[in-house]
Amino acid sequence: MDTKLTLKLDKEHINKAKEYAAKQKTSLSALVEKYFAFLSDTEADKKSELTPVVKKLSGVIKLDPDFDLKREKAARLLEKYK
Image (cartoon, rainbow, N blue to C red; front, side, top):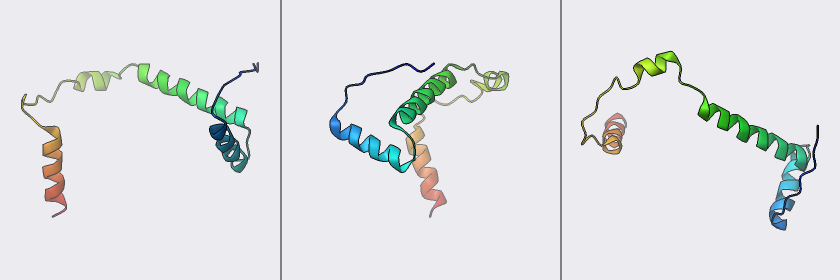
C-alpha cells in the first residue's frame, strides 16, 4: 500500500536528485523507496546473529596489549611493495 510522504529539503538537492532519477529512468519516489529499503536491509544485517563457526572462532587469536595494528599493517605493506 502506497502512502504519501512529505519531505522538506534544500531545493538544490531536490533538483540534483530529480536529474539523477531521470538519468536512471526512474522516479524520485522510486529512488527514495529503494534507499529506505536499503537502510532497512542494512539494519537487519547488523542485527543478524553470528553463525556458530564465527562464534567458535571468536577470541581464538590473542594479541599483546601493546600490539599496534596500523603499524604492523604499514610494515607488511612496505615489505610487500619493496
